[in-house]
Amino acid sequence: MEYIEVEQKFRLLGPSGELKDRLTALGATPGRAGRQVDTYYNAPHRDFLDGDVVSEWLRVRVEDGAASVNFKRFHPIASPVKTHCDEYESTVSDAEAVRRLLASLDFAELTVVDKTREEWHVDGIAVAFDTVAGLGDFVEFEFKGDAETVEQATARLDAFIAALGVGLGDRIRLGYPHLTLGLE
Image (cartoon, rainbow, N blue to C red; front, top):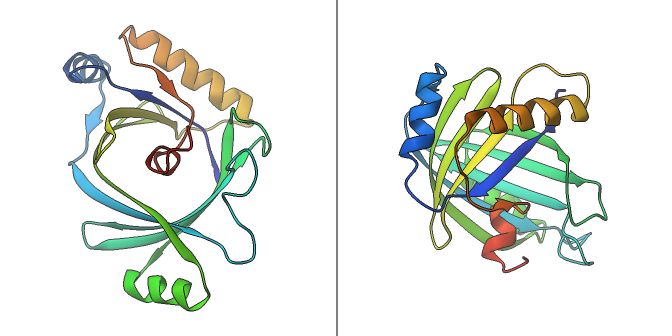
């Protein structure tokens, strides 16, 4: 399922220790925590914020000296509850050049999401522990394994989360830019 992202996000209500202990017991391997600064842009030819439901984002990410540009289109387009998204991402060698390019083309900066992320991996699932400036602590589960359909990937993700047997906070069905912009 190249170029398709299936994930679920939860707001953590307390310390992440119990969840990390459970992941460790399952053989998960933690990555090094790093800072991600994501700048989101609005397009001059199509207002991403127009309409009742925001279904598209354009982002430039800077992380540990590396950078990428990313576009996501969430599905179903008009539904407030999204199941997955098309995701197109590529590394870039010069984030400032991309920012200037977008500004020259009249793309407008919408918001910046500044977060610390620690990502764990197990059984084709990436588990990201995020501390987002101004928003708090979250955990994201993203399917990274092999599946033929979004429904298969979602079912495997649901089963993995349920099998953890750990209480999570409320499920968040919006992205961090939605939350920073107050689009809840």
